[in-house]
Length: 532
Image (cartoon, rainbow, N blue to C red; front, side, top):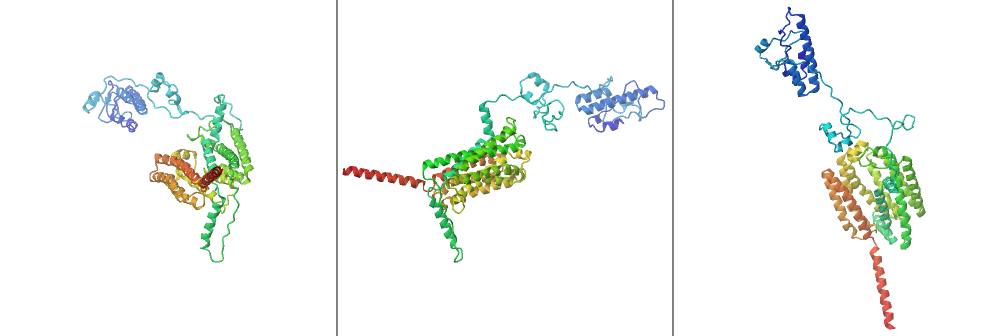
């Protein structure tokens, strides 16, 4: 029986045991053995098994040493039989068989001592410089979870915050929130509105407004040339009729600023509304990601009712401001809000094509700015509007794909179906594909009468830099290359739009014409004064 007990422990197979030295031992039980010897043998076997079990459970050298002291013998790897197979041998017989005495005096079995429970130390207390706590910890690595203690067993599940009847659980005691100041409220509402994203959206809408042609006939002339080129490929008798809608591009600077100001305010409010509803839907998932768990709703700084009220007010006021300009602007603003939330927000958890849908949302602000200037986004008469849309649409992929690669672990843990999570090589390839597509897109601007011929060559600087970063990211999908592409995309958009506005067709000719008129007027006035 003892052999079967010791089979599971390799260290214990190196031990052999013997009982009290005063007893008589043999390999087989003798028929003339007294009852007292049998009782001693059973007590010795029972205590040995108990000590062996304690040693196997502790797996500690001290346990094995106490086991050796209790047994009294160390052998060559053999274990002598006990109850049912005879009594242990005498000292002389054990010596003749090659066993050696480990301890001349047998010690009583030491029962396993249960140490006193150590004090509970939570993870946040491990950071304190307390020597008493450090001594009690005994070099045990601290817990990484604020809910699981270091020395205590796994805690019981926390009680639910809401009961089955929908009422708050009275057993939950929340930490009292400090009285917020006005600055704290402004900071949290900025986070709710995604202030940095809102600024970017507003600037792209202003760029679309600024890129409207100073000469309304430039876009029309470009489309007429395109129609004439197509006319050559059509059969005789067929004709292409392109309607020429009058452009409402303002020539007066005061009127231009009067329109630009409400466009800026309306776009900013609509963007804040869409961001608020987005966080309202994604609050449970934002709490699971380190990048978004500091937002107002996961932090319980404000209630969902506050977020919904803020989103509703900003949306209504923003759409009303855009409607005051023209109904087309209000329609594009409403489409932006609905596409971003709920359509794009819900699609993120169901399909990888949410990135393409989000790119459509990102391309709408330039269309809105263009519509505020011309009251039309007809692709036949206003192709420049869709060229600006294509710029923002293409730009979204290298920018967002690089960002999603750096936080793909958080997206995966929260259940978002992102291309960077499900297919990282394809994610990098898409970023490279749309980065390279920006190069030929720049040549479409002078062809559509939006800029002069210098712009495509100036745009090669940001286009080449972002394409090179995307190529490196495609070759090696590392965190460093993804961050390089992310920052390269931010610099690309700024330079691309600045170069486009600086090379706008008719801009420098207008200033040159003004200078020539001033020179002529000065010469005329000088001649008149000379005659007099």
